[in-house]
Image (tube, rainbow, N blue to C red; front, top):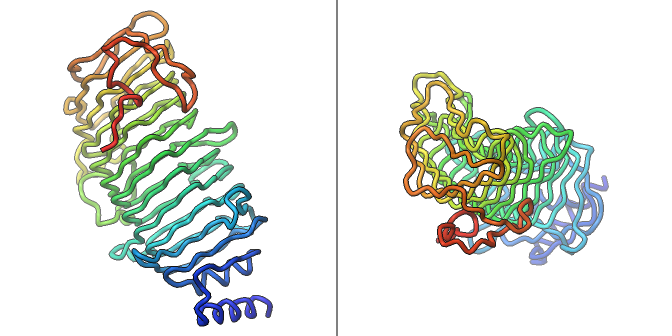
Length: 385
């Protein structure tokens, strides 16, 4: 009865033209507001604890009047915690902004956005901004932010800490930007990847992010997806037209894995003390419709490594490592002077010039060396278009 009354009151407010800004103070009020929100609505969540298990479909703002779900006070953001396997699932939504929320402790996913199973009508124009999503899983295929069939989206200034599968998992997503985010691995979480782009994902940019001890693969450029889940229908690649630039990677098994991918450019990144490999080239499906992983570009990166890196590039069977390009990278071994062994010859590589990284293991690390050979290398050299 109480929930019904809340819905009636909110609907009346909208009919009266008062729906521009709506303050919600608890889970029931939020659930009701999500059911009735229209273009231009701003749902301001008061500080406090909110339960998960919320699912809403077909929220549709407009380009000039998005629907906004946000904290009423960004300095005291609302906190989503169980019960519920996932905090909030957004299906088939458009022109939506979600910002200034805290999501933690869910066993399935933190936040989920998808196309509702209608592959021909993707969710679109969604912005995720200034979110903290943490302690998801802790093991298995459980993601902090799960995106399936989402186009034209942005993930900006978000922090991810501890997850099971991926911090951001994308299946069949297109025209997206992930920027200025932090990915922090935590003990006790399986963390197979930080950012995974697979299932036909294309036209993605990952830039100016910080990855710290994020597990097996910081960037999984591609993957292994069942044919029924590709958006659009499966072609001959898992991911294509992916750009990863201006990021800082500290620790983790490897910063980048190309997996059944077509192309992709990894450039102007700073890599500090990876645990095993600098990059991987893999083919994790044997379906003959897929081309061998091919034509990746690895250039203008700054790599600082120690003796833990014995094999620089892990090459799996069924791939085309000879099609990869290595160009203009700066390599510095802190133990010995071992140069990288790569699948193809590198053009204009720089070797054993100490970058003198200040705060090497932090997001604020920067090159203090004045050696001209390091100009334009690594994250310090990234110039956004």
